[in-house]
Length: 370
Ligand code: PEP
Ligand code: MN
Image 1: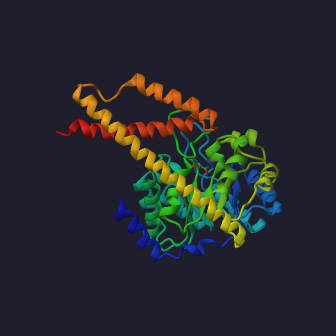
Image 2: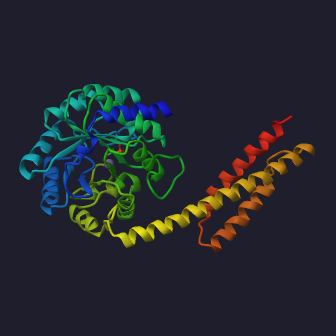
Image 3: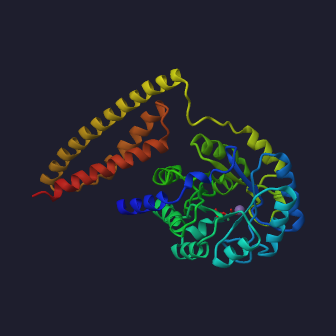
């Protein structure tokens, strides 16, 4: 793990990532249809988005990685001509998804400004390597969507392959992760993975794609706001002139006017301030947080010591570590108490499961001791 991070840092050292931020406004807004369908649909969507003045880059998918066969798989190279016209007519830089070397060559031939790599491609190191090889020596921007698996290393690895190929302008797009469990969102955000990516590779822009994350237009504003509050650099949002009749992702697309309205509702907060009163107040509050964190650690340490003593008794009396009835009792009690304190049952469950697992690990160690 350590060496891998070092390797990324080494690559990033020689790549002036910070220069990537060529766009003036935050958030950098990438918008456009999930799929290019017809020349009219592409041109009309682009016209409305360009005229709004709120969109920096026009996106449209030409080759669509669909989960099931017999779905609309995109118009292919034909649609790149329309993107070229979008740039010529409306002056918007364009972005397209590439999944193979051939897509890269086609997109470059048509002068596409930004290439993005989809979640079903960034998950595959072979595909990432062949795309990176195809991009050697090219000065195009490339954005890497998070892989469908919630695996930070895979995402970092995908970025790393592009950096190693000498691509100077690399960015990341957080679009959420697949899971078997059905949740309200189409993909689980797992914000902590994007935060980890940002910590490990701080100088590349990070965008959020709330369209694919939410899977429905009703979730987009909340997710976009959350991303901006986490200081993301930009957003990629799907927009279609007639979402209900879109050939892909119809539930999550917004009309250009709904998109513009949504953008105006996002509250942009500054990541930093020079206001010394605010800085002092924040400093003091953060000191309080540090004190509470220290107390939490002290309490956890004491709790583990008690768990170890229980482990010794269990060993002496030849009793199993896991006592399901007791565990259920602990959890129910804590959820009830937590709710009265404004702590959600999800939060309490996650915390207690982690604490319980750590107690089991400590008791296992005790059992093994001679
Ligand atoms: C898309 O942007 O249309 C797309 C297919 O995205 P993802 O790879 O995130 O599913
Ligand atoms: Mn889509």
